[in-house]
Image: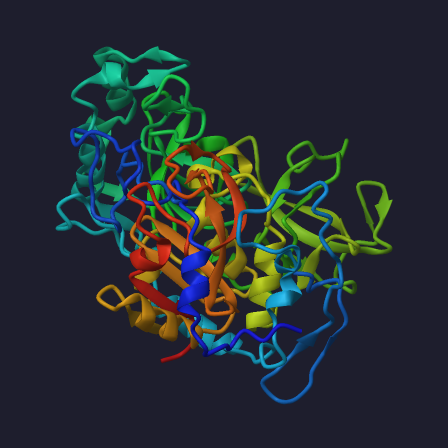
Length: 521
């Protein structure tokens, strides 16, 4: 089994493996948005910048080995390269998660109590463009909110419409000024009261969160289908949120999540009766967690609200014990199934709970996975080859999105932005270090740690002959031939070394600014 904690740095081999690559998450792509569009701090909500971002665990026998460790059975699958292409420098055996896992990678990095404390300490700040106005943290909202706070965020969006609307495309056709004026009107800014009555709710399905209340997909290029300029982030199923406002057409809510706020279709949110109900739903006796790439609720002729819903990795649902669960649900006995209780949206917009059966053969886990390096890597590899989805678009995810999905399997809630500034972690600022010093620091990491440079977040795998490897969602890279600047677009979760390059031909290793492992200080 491969041992990741290699300390010998082979500079000659590393140099020989240099492959020019550009990640669409990197900040020096040719797809940057003009400065008249929303340009905000990384923690604030409105932005049209396109600095593109760029485990087998639940089905295995798990056995405790010693206090503070948990071991899972390795996988022996081998990749047939007759059918799957690899990036230069990546060998077939590297495409197996267990290649990267050593004997000491089953150590538990944080307990449930430490994770809860970390989540509280690491809450994201939602700031206005000028960083002078801040939304309350999700758990700090009260019954009312000063309307000026919301107006600031809505006006940030309104003030950031493009100065040249014809440089943006809807269905391949340039937009006009009146189009953007209509989006501002839909935001209903004039109807924001001085004192907002706060409502509490839960998401009931996967959607995207928008800068304006519309599902229109707007692109910088007439041929682009990936980088929607109005998309902010993903709306995952069964997440708590705060509802502050409605669009003028009554079709959208303006909502606040754990580290971001935006517009989402009303039919994606069900309201709670009160804050007490909202809080109680966040603390069930037990969760059932989706630990596969995704699962799908079956077609249910008795309940259209849950029929065929797709739940991505990290989705958490209230698990009902066999003793408390009904014996029959929608004319089906509950033999061989988990029973979960999920919120759906009733005709009045409020939550109606539904029992749903989930086959025990699905890739799910009772409670959160043990937080170990081995489990982080195995979870990440379940997304290998998945489609890249900018901001959660196309029912996929980008680089920070997949780290959120992976880490939610352990109960860890990473912010949507500024993950590299997370607190309560082992973190090293390597921005001013030489490549040699960066390699040394990276060599101290455990698999599953995070490596970042502006515009991109990666999950660290390990070192091979002094060369560091990562897995991440990548949008664009340069063809792997020395001297070539031809760009190709994997738009995929891939494994590659840090010697791939950006458009500037600067290697990812040169670009790395922060490395971190999420564990107590």
